[in-house]
Length: 440
Image (cartoon, rainbow, N blue to C red; front, side):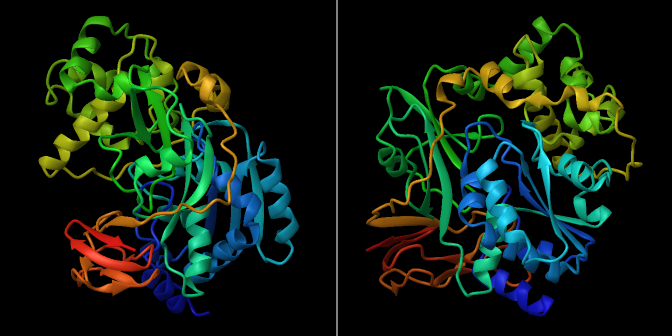
């Protein structure tokens, strides 16, 4: 296929980054690159989808990577995954001979192995400049599920399902393919229901995931995991702290130990990001040390500072988030940063996943969550029109319309960044708003 044909097929299929950000993939593929990386690191604890996918659909992953390379004109492709995923490694090695210029890079079991800046450096030796993105060094990175969706897109199959791990305080932790638009509660029921009466749900991983306010809300193209936890669990409590409480804790108990900086993965890559200084400035005023505050934009929000480094329960990542939001309100744009040198001791400060899980208080929930072929039996779905970076899709159906599974129900507004949305079940449109509700 010609590059433009691949890009057009991906655009029509509504493919977005499945790693969590949801950036429209066709835009990435329009860039010209030297490298294409398949991100199979799956660095968030407890989430199992990427490992299951690579083990079960290795050929599709490789086909998707090959297509991404063709679209971007890349000379080299690499699949980066952890050596511990032995079944996935074996499946990929079995299929690898049929694909040119693609190799496998095995990672150790550390967090955050899937961070794009870190992954690019580990696999290619290229260092993405601070405040930059991989394409600045000729690299395009896509999650492995995104690549499978690319392979499906050129066959005319849109993104209507999502691989989700349902785990934590549930009776039967599992990983499965579920239609976009089914509810969080329905997936918890498929996993046997919660094992605790009072519970909350984290969507995504325990490090970067967000609390689900209502389990009646639908899953999206970016939903990688649902972690059910007792309502009083520390991972829930910390997410519910107000900014006032976060700042009060910082003012009263910070030891100025700088562990948050010394373990920050971006600082270790040489970026001028020092979370301990940002936390100190937040105790006073953002305008007191502008050169320190501005570096908050370099934070990747991995949560290492909050969940692993700090022994006093302070949240530098929350402070960086607030600073970034304030700078955005002021219309501030970062000046170009010089490409730094990684710190020589960085390899000795990788965070082992088992130790991280223990620090998070999640050892009891570190279960296989094995793959199931069971298909969810859903009578209706509510498909959000905004489940990607950019503008919401505009509905092209109305109440009362009959739609088929895979049919386009939302298109990208003219001239906007966005992604198409498709029906994940066949049925009748009963409501059109921020979501399109379809009933069988």
